Image (cartoon, rainbow, N blue to C red; front, side, top):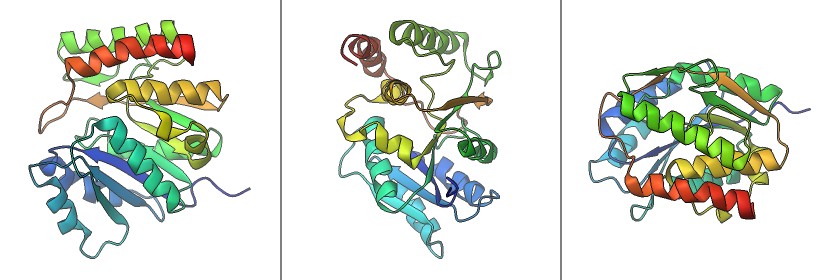
Length: 238
């Protein structure tokens, strides 16, 4: 059987992450992962994020950049990015944030679990609460949203709203990405729900989530309301 790690890719969506991306990309390519490719999907950032990636692309053929023609949101960025890398033969895919809330050092652990699983969740809550520098309000919002989504959808995993995951290419192909209309963490819930309904093999591994050091959070009331109603759509219509 072919190893799922033959062609590993990391997909990182960005919007106004110039400072973070300048540090993140070298850290990713310093990881002990053979034949690693990294795709940055930039949501038309006005701060020059794409220009910074282009600078780092010089002499590095495994760093890829795709710039959206206009700001389209997290969900659209991921759908586009996953399609891009599947067309190029990716066998294992890690999705992660650009702001160091997801540690590059955890990427090899997530990929390693793909030898025996289809979907690996980097979980903030599988071993208690592993979050650093969040205010109490944000922590309560996140844990409450996870509990609410789990109760409504029936998903049995501890962290279904987080965006640090590893996928086999076959798992991504099975969930019909282009039909997902959600954005924000609602997009993460839909992906997990569809994979679970497909009876794919899940694994949650503990991570430590650290609040961003540079830039601003992209969370908004619109994203929260979208997710609030979205889980009921999943419950009622699948």
